Amino acid sequence: MGTFRLAEDTGIKKIRELHASWRDIIDGNEEIILDFSAVRRLDLASIQVILAGAREARERSLAVRMRGANEEVRAQLQLCGLR
Image (cartoon, rainbow, N blue to C red; front, side, top):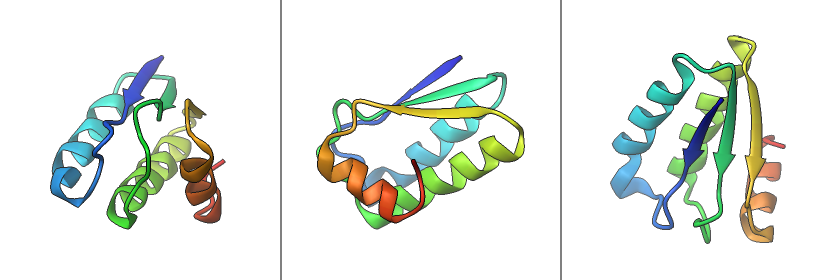
């Protein structure tokens, strides 16, 4: 199991780091926990990377779970299809 902890300031300025982190967490794990505890809100670029990573994980039959998302983050992700 790998835990992917997103930073409070997850946004376009750190998109490369976010993408690289996804690549690292997907390789070698059977389950991925997305930890949104520190995140207050997400921008569209971050959501796109998260959705792409979740889709790739599911294509590899990896379980993806969320924890610690506040109501605003949860609503943003649900609007984009991540539950």
